[in-house]
Amino acid sequence: MPPLRIARAMAASVALAALGTLAACGEMATLPVEAGMGPAPTLPAPNTTLIPTVNTARAVGWADGAHPMAAAGLAVNAYASGLDHPRWLYVLPNGDVLVAETNAPPKPEGAGGGLKAWAAGIVMKRAGAKTPSANRITLLRDADHDGVAETRSVLLQDLNSPFGMALIGNQLYVANADAVLRFPYEAGQTQITTPGVRVTDLPAGINHHWTKNLIANADGSKLYVSVGSNSNVAENGMDIEEGRAAIWEIDVASGNKRLYATGLRNPVGMAWAPDGKTLWTAVNERDELGSDLVPDYMTSVKDGGFYGWPYSYFGQHVDTRVTPPRPDLVARAIVPDYALGPHTASLGLAWSGKTRLPAPFTGGMFVGQHGSWNRDPRSGYKVIFVPFSDGAPSGPARDVLTGFLNEQGQAQGRPVGVAIDSRGDLLTADDVGNVIWRVGPQP
Image (cartoon, rainbow, N blue to C red; front, side, top):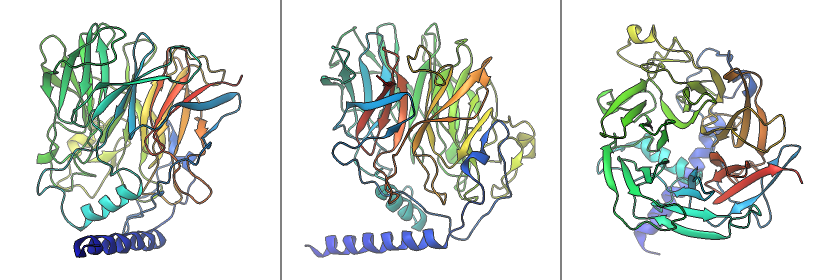
């Protein structure tokens, strides 16, 4: 082995050993995850430590024949497997399922350096999040409706870390890490070779949070794009956060955009409530305040609303790490509607719609929880369901898919995007298992 490769291998071994030491000397949760869930979560005092808790589940993938565990009354099977880091899903009107096979873009030269960034890279690699991006949208088709996609084709390729997708009429919109593109699309099409038209640029660069999601309004006149922050809590200054930690509204006809809501650290999942007018989002909150803080959340999104980041969390709870403080912004920070547990990395969000899943999995939101790295014990690593009543969450969350961690605490899979397919079944993208899981009623 060449000397450079030997040195790198030794450095990786030292880093992994260091991770074990860090996890051992970090703090631990004093509350169950459930205490940090619901409309009024328990928010204890911050527990900052010199060395943050690092407790990442090592990615190992699924053994042959293994799969997640579905809740009582439900059954799960692999809708498609052998994918390359599938992150996000979009169901077309004809029932075809689009999958963004993607990962983070390369960082600009000189960006994201330092010991902390190096350690974060080791953590991400251990979690299965450092693979090169396939940069494509794959189309899956289940023509015989047996719950398994028998046709697979590359719809779009050579993209730039694509994520969100939305169809308006005969135009397919795709959110790359740096821009929204538009492609012509015909129903049943399995490959698009026409170059995309750049609709608008998106904040890019360092991309601490790189995923850009898309959702269209009911009449197709507007697109909403989620853009995560470039840091944990603005530790590198607010100048690199321009236009980030926000949801943008794009006018489809002109391509003009405006900030729709701000102070959302990393909004990823977006879904419409049954009225078709109230936008909801799932947000990843900040790290390094202890295993019990801060809960991720989902919330209705108010036009012009400010949700606290980086100056406060869950309303007016001030984060004293952020300087200079902004009491004027903290005073108007909106309290989120529903906490989803600390460090659960709640990414996927889908309204149940016309699901054929039985009660109690009707009339609510499905949430894909990618799983924690900054909590001991770990949280997330499952798909949950939050029931709604009169347009708002109305009860405790229920597990839908579990078993993504094995008995050794290793990640067999990590759920991300969730969607309801044309049959009313739940689809979940698993970017460690490289599978799309389908959940339907128990036969």
